Structures are given as C-alpha cells and as structure tokens.
Image: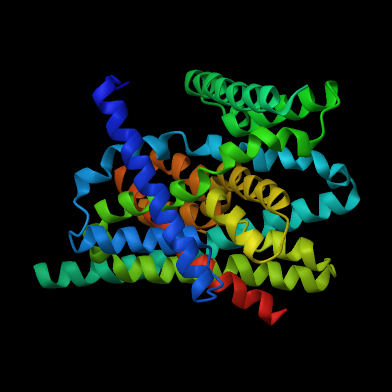
Length: 132
Length: 228
C-alpha cells in the first residue's frame, strides 16, 4: 500500500476533479452532437487524444486515474443494489435470462479467443520465416 | 429520518462496507467473495430488514454513482500506457475484439428473437459483455434498465471466470494472448482479474480488450438496437 501524504491526497483530488471535467465536457459534446455514445466514453477518447498529443502530460492524470481505477467497483454498487426492484428476476423468466447471458458469454469467449489465436499463429510463422 | 442523515449513512456505510469486503476478498480470493457481490447482498438485506426503499437508498447512492463518469474517463490512462503493445499485436486485437463484440451482441439479438424478450429487457442485456461503468451508462442511453444491466454484467463476468477456462480448453484456445483477449471481451474486469493466472501478456491483452470492447461496444450497441 502506498503512503497517502497530504500532498499526494491533494494531487489525487485535483486530478479527479480534472477527470470530472473531461466527463462533463464529453457529456456536453455527446448532447450537442446528439451522439448515441455515452458522454463519458467521449471524455475517455478526448483524454486519450490529449495524452497522445502531449496536450495533457501523463503526470497530470496518473495519480488521480490510478486512485479512481483502484476503487472503481465501489461506484457501481448503487446500480447493482437496484436489483432489489426486480424480485421476479428469481422466477422462471429470470432463469432464462441468466441462461441466455451465460451461453452468449461462452460463445463470445470461443469466437474471440479462436479468431485471435489464428492471427497469432500466422504472426508467429511470419516471425519464424524472417528469422530463418 | 432526515435526508441529510440518510445520505451520510448510505455514503459512509457503503464505502466502509466495500473496503471491508475488498479486504476480505484480497485475503481469501474466492470468486464468490467478490466485493461487489458481497456488498450488494449485504446492502439489499439491510434495506429489506429496515424497510428502506431503493429510492430512499439512492438519496445517498446517487452521490457514489456520480463517480462513474470520471472512472470511465480514467480508463484512457492504462490504454495510453499500453499503446505500443496495441500496435504490436494490432491484427490479433482488432479481429479478436470485433469478432467477440459481434458475437456477444449478435447472439443476444438472436436469443431476444427466439425467446421474444420484452424490449426494455433486450436493451438491458445488450451491454452485458462490457465493463460495468460503461455498460450502466450505455444501458441508460439505450433506454434499458441500468440496474438490470449491472446484474447481467456480473453474470457474464462470473460465468466467464468460473466456467470460461473449461470452455476455452474444449475450444482448444491455448495461447495466453488469446485467452486474455477472450476473457477481456466476454467477461470485462472480472476476466482481466482471471487473466493474471495466464501471465503478463495475457493480463495486458485482457485489459486492452476490456477497454477497447467498451469503446467499440458503445458505438455498436445502438446499431444492434436498430437491427431488432
């Protein structure tokens, strides 16, 4: 565990406020251009572009992003607690939905894994050929 | 109880509960002890016990949820750090993620037709392979039910982590790179945590795959709604 000095906590706080600003700017752009994409994703792309072109130096975001990502699961607990509104999810239809999600997840694993494995094999063969 | 007091109890209580559960999970490291799962169960039981409605809980809950936006933005940082990696394996990444995303959402579209799912349920399941903070926000922009989406996301995560290794073994997916890509695109953050067992390369791939699937999924999700 890293030590949290007052200085470090201030840095984190300021950087988290910066992340909030990116999120709000993203919301605003998404609303303005009537994009179907959530504003926070627009904010993510914006921050990536800013980092890539060195508009925002890495150190201005590092501690805040690191901190917020470590405790990220905390922020979606309110949404998962919302399950309390849907007690019928434990019924027959709920079981079907759970089954659908599981089967779809396995299909995704297989297709994604298999297709990338084929590409990886081709890549390895090419590397071998150039080395020989 | 006054709203201010309730707000403080919910916020402070949830934070302390989460940190405690995370500590527990770190000590025993069993999938079923995942802090989100245990915290949710404890909060739901507490609300039922004291007869507090979800609306009342959300007086405090919405202040915690407020951090979802900046959390999604923060995902740009690890992605930026891995940019050279992304370029090196770009072909495998692009194919693995796009085929995974099309399978994840396409199969839901298909199942929705077969089982004649109601529209709001269908819209809530579509983002299920995507990391929770993004899935919740995507669900609300698709006019789904974010709370249902959060639960489906967890089911996708747990089934991928618990049964996924067996499924991949049967499908003869052996390389650490592909296992990571698959876990990240099907089971998001839970998959990323699992991928650490297959080594550093697998972990990087899973994390890249989770983030890129979330970005691409936000753009592709609305298209699948149009197709239905």
